[in-house]
Image 1 (cartoon, rainbow, N blue to C red):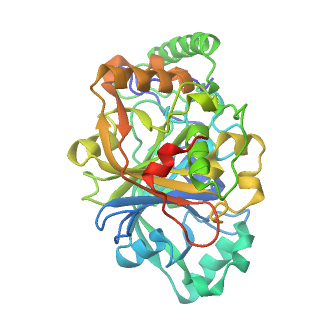
Image 2: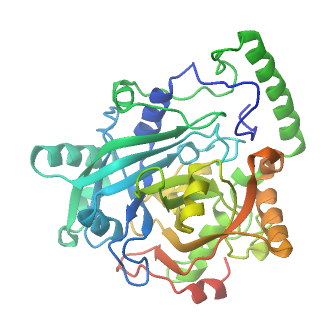
Length: 418
């Protein structure tokens, strides 16, 4: 059972024992082929203002296939906004969700639910040369063989991340503290398939109280699942992917298909460094194309670091990779067999202020949209100060084909349909 949606519980705290936090974090890095890379923008006309946060989906690898070092390597072009940003300011973050890893994602669990594991590594992502570049090349080409034939005149270069902070969440009770030393010392291990076995007694409480708590949560969760199966993870039942030259249509299709993406903010906890975090999204009621609005609705709490960042600075980005869409995952073939960083594997980033909705009509639309796609949200704790938000984006970065055309006019987005 992985379909419960409670973030913090009074009276009991539980944690994973079947697999250590560091081991699950390492597993996410080992299994992921791509991630959302959050950077501080060097300034890109029509995409992002200088000094603002930006995010983009990119290939990652932490070793040759079958091995794992925990060290994240990337292969970026200086022509790409992310590559250009990191050459100016190497501070960035790498965000991975368990929802992107396999055919079932997180099963019936909502991508924003804590038990759908999520990881953000923050630090410096720097260009490497010499023997380190050789290691990066071996790691990238082993897991992304298509990169061997990418154009030599596009100024590609290898990068390595130096991890300075770790945000990890795979269960209720808040983010886990993982030291850098523990992260690199751990052996990758998948999380247990259910909440059973995750409970450990904390200081001041008995194991019996924890067992009783878990039993009650499991019982409640079974009732929730029976009453409200999470349709968010089913592949789209109607409509096909628009042709690549219908760029605005592809963008709208991606948004309506998506169940989650990465919100990137300027972190108040990391001294202004960029920080990415996984959030569920909806742009309309249900999966039918006719119900798509193109609006980006979220259900957030200020107990979360992203919510705290937005209180200080509401300007942020929301990034979606086509490789993460449920329809792709169900087929177990990402982006029609394309590499996630291949331009034909579309990726989109919206930039603008995140607004806490206050008008009753806006709240009603957001609630209907989110709760229809993410029904588990209806049972999230009312005491955790969740509110409905909308990203009022002012610019769109969009790539779905070769040629470098990476902007999309906002009005063209609104005028299109999925």
